Length: 267
Image (tube, rainbow, N blue to C red):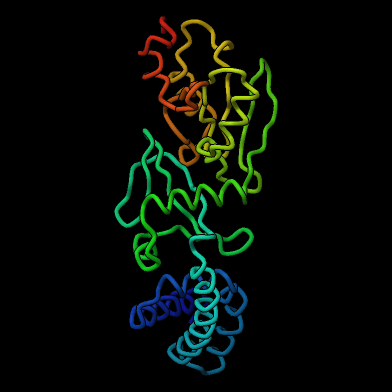
C-alpha cells in the first residue's frame, strides 16, 4: 500500500474511532496542539510496512491522544473555574448566534472569550455560561472590567486631530470603543463630541466633530473603506458612530444626523 493510501485509510479509521468515544473536536485539537500526525506519519508508515495493521496503529495512536486530551482537559478546567476573572470582550460584525451569549450594538455583536494563557483563548458558549452561573449583564460587566485591565487602550495620533485606537496586546482590539475609560480619555483629547469610524475588528479611528467636512456621508466612507481595504472577515461595522460630549452616549451617525445637533446636509 502506498503511503498516500495508507494515510487516507489511517485518517478514516481515526475518525471512526473518534466518533465512538464522542470526542472528534478534542482529538483534532490535541493533534494540532502536539503535531502528532506530522511527527509520527513516517514512523507509522514504516511500522505498517513492517507488518503492523492499520487498525493496531490507529488504536495505539488513539490511546496516546486520549492521554494528551485528559491532561489538556484538566488544564483547561482549571482556567474555566476562574472564568469570570478571565473573560474579555470579542467584538465583530454579525448578529447573535444560538448557543453563544452576546450583546447586540447595531450591526456589531459583543461576545466573550476566556483567557487560557498567553495567545490562547476560548469562545464562551451558553453551556459554559450556564454551568458557571454567569448571567447576561454579569458577563458583559465582568468582560468589560477585565478587558480594560488586561488590554488597555493604545492611542496613536493621526492627521487633523484624529486618533487610531486599539487594545494593547489583543488582535481583535476594536472593543476599546466600549471601555468607559476610553470614552473618558477621548473626551479629554477631542475636547468635544467626536465620531468613531470602525476601521476593522483590530482598531478604530476617532474624528473630532469639527474635522468632518460639511455634507460628508460617514457611513458611505466606512463602506467604501470596507470594500477597498478590509477583508470581509475583519470588517467591524457598516456604519459610523457619534459620541456626545455631555453624556458620552454613542449612537449611529444616521441617528445623530437626524437629530437637531447633527450634520444638516448629507451629500
